[in-house]
Image 1 (cartoon, rainbow, N blue to C red):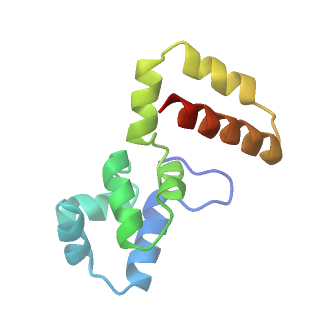
Image 2: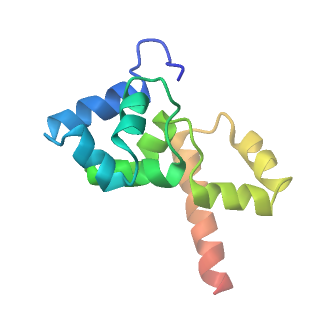
Length: 121
């Protein structure tokens, strides 16, 4: 897995957080439904991070923000992937249009979308 400059890899962060919770590799592998060998390989960055749904489960078990972990794993959340597949032309355009917006502008857009969804029900 590639790392951004100075940032820890998914595997390194996973190992650090798991060990901080005092959960053994074998036990955590069982909790997320993978083999201990596979989990060890992920933690050592020999294998890419698991799927988005499994990354979400990892984050939840560690008491962390799933969206942050999905970003760290360089994955796309399943619900976002569905939206992109349903709207293959609109979603990329929407993302490009949003490039450079401030956090406040994003909040305004999100609020407008919430209102539109509410009216549509």
